[in-house]
Image (cartoon, rainbow, N blue to C red; front, side):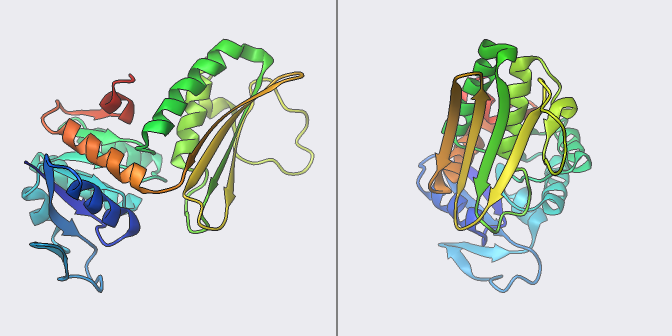
Length: 260
C-alpha cells in the first residue's frame, strides 16, 4: 500500500486528489497538509487523516506526495522531500526559471513527475500537435488559444506553454525565440516562425486548449476540453503509483503513460 501525502489538501485540487486516492486499492492518503494558520487545521478530512501544517512529519511518513499548490510552497516541499528521500508528483503551474531550477536540483536526489497537466487526453494532444507541426511544415502558421476560469492566476497556462513547446519541436524551432504572448497596435505582419499563445479568462471553465494550424485555403484545429478537474487528480494518482521506486530524475506524464 503506497502512502501518499497531499499538500494543499483543503484546496479544490487537494480535495480531488484525496478523492482520487480513495478510488484506488493500491494507495492511501497518509497525510493532509495546509499552511500554518489555515482555519481547517485539526479537522478530520478523512478517517484517521487530520489536516496538519507539519509538512516535515507528513513527508517523512509518506512514500510519495502530490502537489498542486503555489510556486513558493512547491519549492519548499520539493527541497524537503529531497532531504527525506520522498518521491514527488508536481502539478503546480506558473513556476519561474528559478523555481523550476529547484525542481531540477531535487530531481538529482529523488524521482519527480512534473507536468503542467495530468490529463491523458492533454498528453495525447501534445503528441499529436508535435506530429502535425512536423508534417504540415512551414506552409501552416501555428497559434494557440487557451481558456480557463476567472480565478486562474497564471497566463498563459502551463499546458498552453507545453503545447507551444510541442509545436516548436515539431517545426524544429526554439520556443523562446518564436513565442508571442501578446499583440497590440501596429505589430507588423506575422512572421513565418512566429508562434502566438493567447489566454482567455472567465466563468468556471475548467480548461480548454486549441492548437491552430492555419494554411492558405484550409485550417486544422486540435482541441482538448476538460469538464472536470478529477481527470487531473486521477492522472496525478496514477503518476504517484508509477514514480515510487524509480531512479532520481525529472519525469513527465509522457513517461508515466509510455508516450515518450
